[in-house]
Length: 114
Length: 113
Image (cartoon, each protein chain N blue to C red):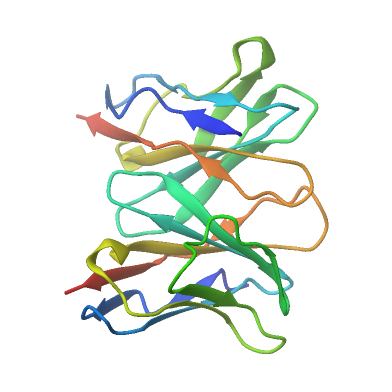
């Protein structure tokens, strides 16, 4: 049973470009969460999605960041017009439907902005 | 708002010695508590969780944690540390239902020979 799959593992972008990060949840999981980890910091919640719905985006920056989880295919975290401060590790987690379920994490995407 | 404090940024323990990593939380209701471990360049692996019931929780790799409501703590323990336990450990708190997790800043565990 494959775990949470994130790709790419490493992504390099120049300032002003777009970054797309993908996350395929574990089989049977319909809840997806995105977190960002800055150097020497813990993970910060960004957004929580279910299929075709954004449930909680209280941690998302107001501009340039968006997320989706379509009916078919992986969840996508999109960052437009990247800046140096976007350099971080971005982690996706998933959990099954129903309450009180722990989240399982992918290995993350390390985003570097030149 | 909920928050998690891990007061120790780094801890060094001799191999074979016991380990305790501290975690204090702030939350208005009964919290859901988690410990995760992260090896360099990897994602987070769930060690154990507390939702309700017995306040002493057993996890994987020989770890356990004790929920103490009076102290707002959820400290992680292991009786004998192995070199392979060297990693960063994160404590997290969530709420019931869906759980967007709030993480502490982590404790880096170093294991000396």
